[in-house]
Image 1 (tube, rainbow, N blue to C red):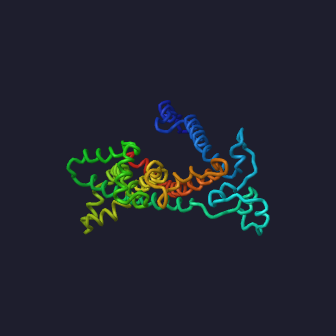
Image 2: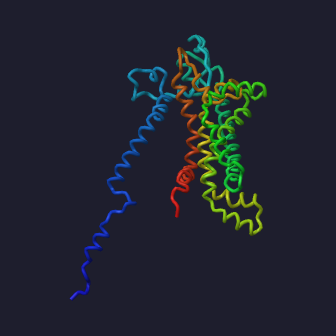
Image 3: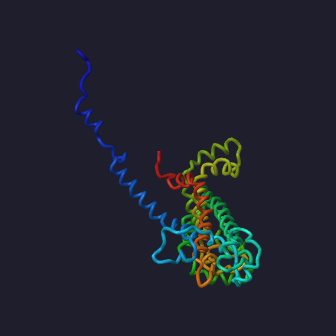
Length: 327
């Protein structure tokens, strides 16, 4: 006879019990469906912008909108060049086209007169956005560490004051900043825009990074200082590595603001320091807005922020959930 005993009803009921933590298969399917729908909806405008960038000008304004069309690089050619209209006789007298853009331009009875200002404006965006992000995150990290580790008088009031600087709409202070910059000689300069974006982003950086640094145990620094490290060395070799995820997440949010900012850039820049956001809408074609060129500029403008976010996606996800679950 077998000595094995049948499992009791109590054991069977415990094993069959549904966990309140683990989602059911139905919940997983619903969540997956919602995520996919949300991703598709958010990707549609980006895909449409890219498709517009490879359309010809007539196709870009056709109604109803064309889904099937012959791809063209005319929008990118118009983005990077300036063109002038010439007579058919003059164009016929020219030598063979020098490149694809030259050939496309001549099909419109036009010739390339020179390069456009898009590349300098794009370079200004890179310098100002990444420079201000570096300064904001650096200053924000130091300030957040001070608020987190030291007894600062009126710390709560100071933190609220820092946060209050982001409650004000930019347009409310645009005119005073414009007058101040004109007196200081910072108007239409990369340094002026970098300092302005840094000042706006520091408040966000301080609040985000203080939460991350608060989650790092003080015992790590105390152990390092017992071993002979100074406070600065403990901060650099102990705290910063632990706060990498928070710094990466903060850098992405600061960069997105500085990269897309339009109001200050339109008011305070017009020439040498103008960034891409106020420049792209001013791309004018023959007879009106050159929509393929605008879409081409927008597509290229999205690439750096997309690459930066993808490179730091792991740190961003870890940073957003940092401290959410306590062990």
